[in-house]
Image 1 (cartoon, rainbow, N blue to C red):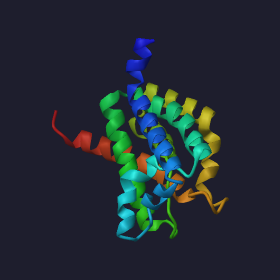
Image 2 (image 1 turned 45 degrees about the horizontal axis):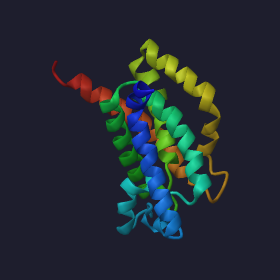
Image 3 (image 1 turned 90 degrees about the vertical axis):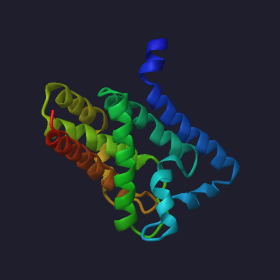
Length: 186
């Protein structure tokens, strides 16, 4: 049990942060949604690092927790340091893309990060092309391939932009990290 706790500590920390914010947000009447990303507004910039931790309610947080545990766990297989760097980069790039290009409404929730992990896992398979990343990508598609419907503007109350830009950010993060890694002397 201790091994699992240590191995999954980054996921435990991330999910705990989301739930601590959700509990605080609940007692504040979900007023923290105003700290989400409001595209092309100066105040909306604060939402770039905060939006993944702010949810519109209990079920919104639950719907992001399970895929964070699974997809984040698959991303964690590459190690703690790479996981935290990837998580920070996906949050940053997704947030910037949403701030620049999304519709004028508050965008909150960890679904951009969830879709970002999906993009990272797919990107690793296509860019790194090693057997482990391909196997992880196949498992990811089997488990979560259907979530790609979420990048389409099907429901007006869902930030499909966070989903779409999350996938794009995930692939961009892998591409940039591999490009930078190859450019550095050994």
